[in-house]
Image (cartoon, rainbow, N blue to C red; front, side, top):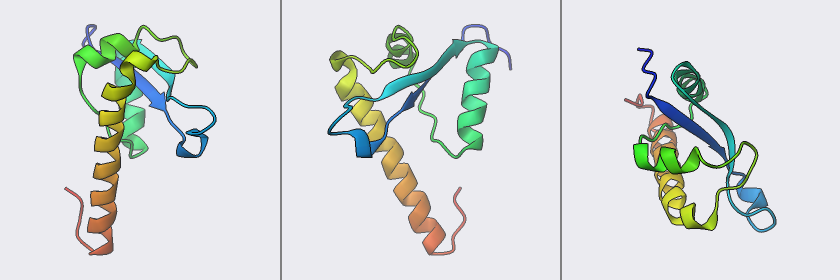
Length: 101
């Protein structure tokens, strides 16, 4: 599935640093095969993968190890809220002994 147009950006955000460090950081980004590897590693680690070409294009402009700019805070906050909700649902299903689909 090597699509040279595919792009991916990985973010890192530590809630414990929220008060001191602030915004999430870009920790990986790439296109084509690199993008596929970023997505594959995220899924293997149980990290939710959100698809948004527009947001990816904006985040791809941020240098590796740099924090996202304030203009992207709201959009990234929505993605983080989505990811946290997915994790909470998965944990709830696990507690109930139901497989996560």
